[in-house]
Structure formats: C-alpha cells, structure tokens
Image (cartoon, rainbow, N blue to C red; front, top):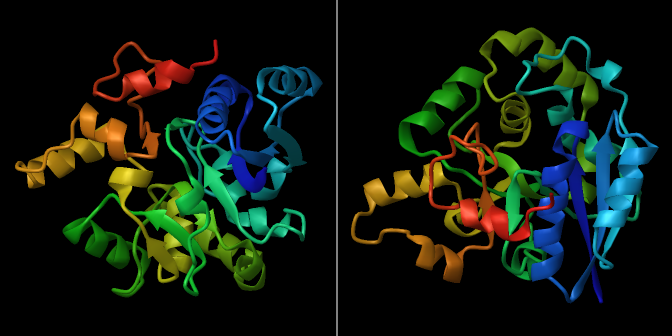
Amino acid sequence: MERKRILVNINKGYIRHFLTMLNSLSTNNPESDFDVFVLHSNLDDADKSHILSSVKENIHIQYIYMDSSLFLGAPKVERYPYEIYYRIFAPLVLPESVERILYLDSDLIVHGNINELYGMDFDGNLFIACTQIRGFMQWFNRVRLGVDKHHFYMNTGVMMMNVKELRKELDPSKIFKFMKSNGWRMYLYDQDVLFRFFGNRIKLVDPLVYNLSDRYISFFNFRHPKQKVDLDWVEKNNIIVHYLGRNKPWKSKYKGILADFYKRYETK
C-alpha cells in the first residue's frame, strides 16, 4: 500500500468528529496506508484507547503532545482555542522523515480519492490550499494585515504542507511577536498568521473540489446561475466537503445540502 501522512489537531470535544473524518478518509482511499499525526494537549489514555479501537486497519495513529502554555498571550476566543495554532508549528515537531503532509480539519468529510491532491507538485510553494474569498475581501485582508497583492488568504482546514521547506522558513519568535502585538486586528487567528507570513507562497486549488462548504455553494451559485452546483455535481466531482463555521451537520439548526455526506460516515 502507498503510505501517506495526515496531520490533525484535536481536543477531547472533537474526538467523535475526528473519527468520522478518518472513517471517510479510510473508506474512500482503501489503497493507501495513513500515518496520522495527532497534535493535542489533553487526550488521555482512555481517549487514545477509544480512538485506536475505532479506526480501520489502514489508519496508524501517532500522538504529538503540545504544551498549550507556550501559547499564553496569543489571541484566542472560546471558539478558537490555542489548538488552532498547533498546525502552524507542526513542521518543527514532526519527525524528520516527514517531508510533505496533508493537514485536515476534523469537521470535514473526505468522500473521494486524495491521490491527486497529495501528489501535487508544490512548484516552489510552501502550501497547496484553497481560498473561498475574492475581490474586496482579499484586498481588505491584505490591507488589514499589511501585505502586498501577491498574498492570498487561504482556508487552513485543508492544506498540503511542504514540511521540508517550512522547517527552513518558520521563525517562531517572529510569529509570536506578530500575534502578541496584532491580536486586535486578527479575526481568524491561525489563518491570519499563515496569510501574513506565507500568503505569497501558496499554490491555489479549486475549493469546489477540495474544500467545499454550503456557504461556498451559495456564493458560487449566486455568481454562476447557469452552472449551479447541486448534490449530483458534488457526488460526481467533489473530493472534500468542509463544514465551516457554526453550521455543523450534527447540530439541529444546520442549514444546507451537504449533511448526508457526514451522516454516511458518522461515528456515534
């Protein structure tokens, strides 16, 4: 089997959704073995035993403990705890043998084959990811965080990371200095950091295929009324469905057309 590296960061509250995401990944990529590196601060032995007993044979879990106290002073709110920063510094704690890795949020479903995404050439970039904003919002974020027109604001929920090169480029002292002095102007904290420092080193790929949300479907259909995305299109063409923001399919107030993809793989 081909071996692929996957990166996640979770806390106790997201174990169920993490297992659902892994179930979808494993089911739809049976020809691959996955080394899944889990960044965490509060998983105990019972949690790890539960995870081990719940994953399929082609999923191999490796835990990396992150000391959350190192992030004291960095901006955060209840919805975005310190765990969101862990992915930024992952290249510094991953084994040296890892040169590329696919980061996946736990509030998403992989319902297609990821071979093409995983094998893409970085073309000298540090990330392969999607952006779900255009025009004014790209300009606004550039002005807000003081970068030029070559920077693109990416969604960090799905991203190929060029770990080998990031090890050379990451400077924790500069990043922490920026976070502590610019918290007042930051909205989506980890995304703001990566945009500020590496937004000009991103290879963009299609969010309809690799990072599709209900919000983006509405945006796309409004702008392209003759090419509307519906469930049939998603079934045939999309690889990764991402439940962004507060609109989650496991909540009673969910609104959208993508809930069934979560329910197919849901781990109770």
